[in-house]
Image (cartoon, rainbow, N blue to C red; front, side, top):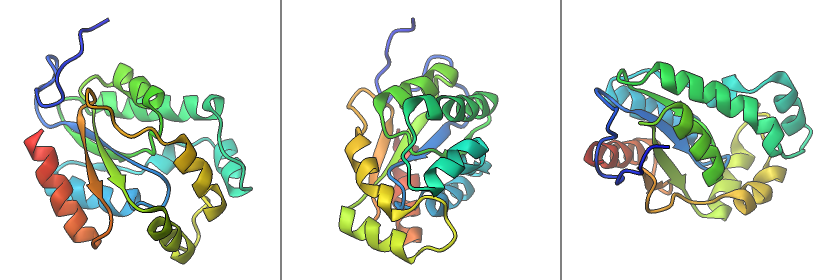
Length: 180
């Protein structure tokens, strides 16, 4: 087991651009903000939803929350992508709601950092109601907030509020990530 490192210092095995996981409950804008941050950092973006097995998408589409067993292969696939980008950088969206999920990602990609998109439940519910064609329904928002464990002080990452428009969020996020 490696010794923990302070969130504002580079990981001892890290060289080059970081891999960033854009996290938060559904509806915070991970799929909108992630590509904007990736572009600003000059690295590729990967959509976390694309890593879900079909069974997970079917389950969520029916309004049933995923359990930890459902999430394991999804997190492992994202972790493998993040590991493959070590030293090259990249941005991937991944709800990463629990500390245990983030620990699993860090085990696969030790230099990964997290961008936690935060917001008021009412604002997020309003945005979810307005979006079309996404498998994650607003009915699951309460379970997402109940599951959410915000970043701990010892986790490398930043939290950014999603109240303003996407460009402002991405600018603040990119500036905060560069300061890490």
